[in-house]
Length: 123
Image 1 (cartoon, rainbow, N blue to C red):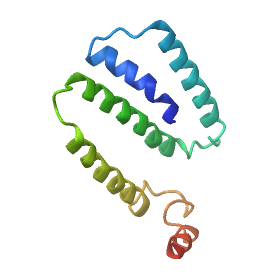
Image 2 (image 1 turned 120 degrees about the horizontal axis):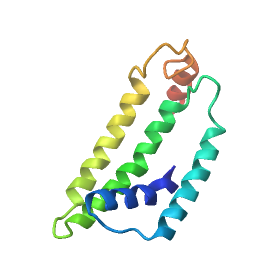
Image 3 (image 1 turned 135 degrees about the vertical axis):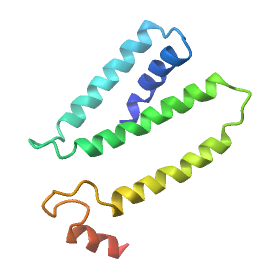
Image 4 (image 1 turned 90 degrees about the vertical axis):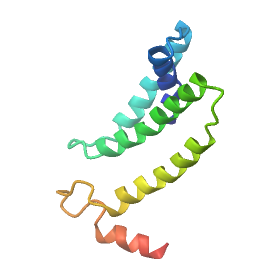
């Protein structure tokens, strides 16, 4: 998923900073994104139960591309506080996904299964 980061950076730069991205950059980014899509398409099952996890994983390179564009848009501003805040928000969201109700209705196979609790208790 991280390989899609340059694509998001190019897209956000084009939209928000009105920059022109060279054609070869678009082609390379789209090729990489296509192969990432092929890799993740193989992990999907018939019910599409991995779609939520894949969508959340896609948010990471999108956020990184947004961060790069934000840093480029105002180089005079110190972005360390924003980076520190993101270092706090990410783990907190992860804890919500791990310990919270992730939609339920999974028949006991999801985050609240006894296998997950046993593995967590060993850590």
